[in-house]
Image (cartoon, rainbow, N blue to C red; front, side, top):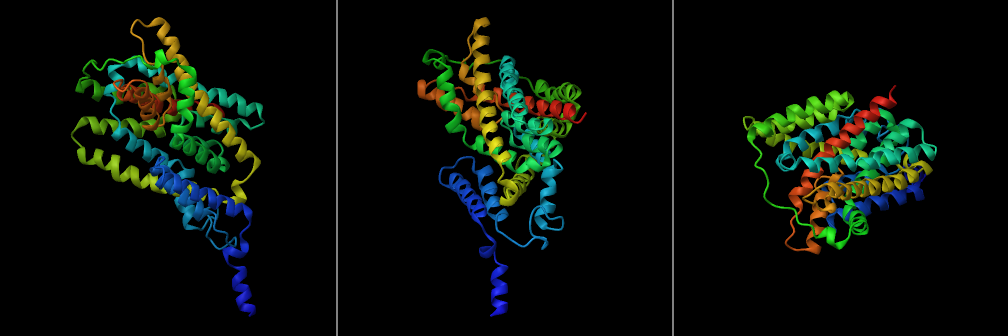
Length: 376
């Protein structure tokens, strides 16, 4: 009987408390949203299951937890803390991205830049709330609505906050259909939402598509050298795609490679939400500031589009400003759907993807700038 009771004391049932139960419920919720509601399943499903795994209670020192140096999860987590997984994801994103829409409408790149204002507003707010500068920068990057970028910067500046920041960033990316449409409708009139974007566009040549990633990496990485780990692989992946001479490599980068990185990234980020480490007052503050950052980024893009219309002869639909965040392709899809509700013949998807693509570049540049400033 003594041995039996000793065995019971080693079980997770005995060691569990309300914190672990709460986090497991969150993991189940994420899995439900991914499977039943199909909210960004490629992100929420591995994260949700990782949350469940990471919150099974255990005795410390057994080499089981993600924060124990000799555990399997800890070795997998190295890809997060080192920034390896985000770089691989950016390589795959580059190989999947078509810049022809953006190059055909270069003025739409300004909306991707404007949406990054959410990062800097949130940085000031986080500093005002008492976050340390490096922590504030890590929280602020959530405004870029780019999970890999948020994880990369946090791993460099505030690795102890990777869990809550990653969960906040991916949660808001998944909740785009809930968060963005009310902001779009609030800041635009029906007349503005009905503005049609012409389908006729300048044909982008193959030479332009080939030169753009080379020019992009030179311009962006010279401006913010700290963005090299993200934008270097991103533009390299795109150059492989556009070169048409390494199709096997481009297809591998855009499928197997990015899928593998996404699996381990999601699973380990979810597992990092170990209740005794994750559930703190600071985590709640991060979730609040993350929602503020994402909302301000959305609003900034829309407002800037309205300002542009004051000076443009050919008006642009202000809804496109909401796609300036780098949540690819969720925000572009949502802009398209909101436009279709107003006018079923108004197709905004390709225009929104142009803003989306520029948003990815903009958020990575912002991350590089913040990293370079905060490390001095």
